[in-house]
Length: 371
Image (cartoon, rainbow, N blue to C red; front, side):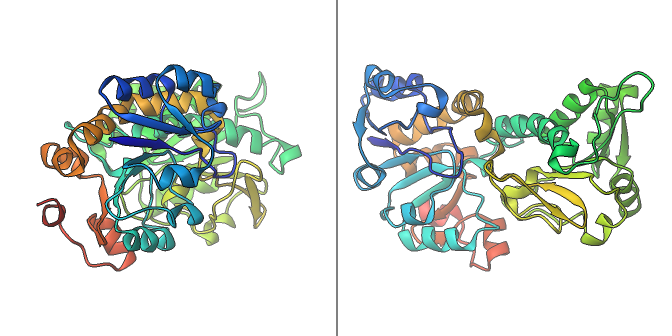
């Protein structure tokens, strides 16, 4: 099979679909890999490293999209890239379709086979292809929030860890999953006062055992959420509904209860955001103000630490990508129900139930298209 790795073009997106080491795995199995020129420069991998791994080089993304069977990316294809996608071509990347009807429409119209990292499931549950980026985003969220809290950046002028004789900053984390847990680890490590909210009693019990007195856990009902947000210097939104749009948990009205210069960091922005006032931002211009509250809503947070993120992502995507190349998409999906859960759009049909529901498409069961 011929595999293509285009250069990522989203604002300040430095990750790349395959590392040179991963390319070598495909080449060793007899596949052809073509990498766009300078695609790996953001992770410190130049074209000579990809050539040494056995890849050829293309000068333009269009050359790749129009000549390969399997496209491996990190972020969703942008509007002009989607024009080059062909029927039955395989696209393997993060898609986040529920809050992006234009992308969904273009992929449906393309007739391509579109498999989303974020909905591939694990044999013991969870979302293993989303997990490493959730880990990165969770850790980055505290770093980004701490920076946004600086007075020069519009924040309250709060040092999250405080100093002797001065109270630390207060951090509220909404969601105790992978991203929320990693955010809590970082915030606790800085010495902040940390509260974690979740609706799952088992998650709360696990968090309580892990953090003990270092963090407060609260059940996420309306009253506890409102109280925790009002008292926070930094609120981190880390909720996830697989494949679907994130629920809007923090309303604009709640912003009026917060202290001026407090910060909201929306990790869920890829799925539409969990704050009513969230809109996507970029690494180039990461924050904006609403009602005196700083909002950080960068939609590709892990792109800021591209080398760490790319290698962590390849660790989990490579086995699935190799199966797609070795077996073809139909046999790969038939033989692996976890990978099949990642199929979002296929040959003009929406095959993920949550995406179909949120965007108003008829849901077509994966088995009907795989056969």
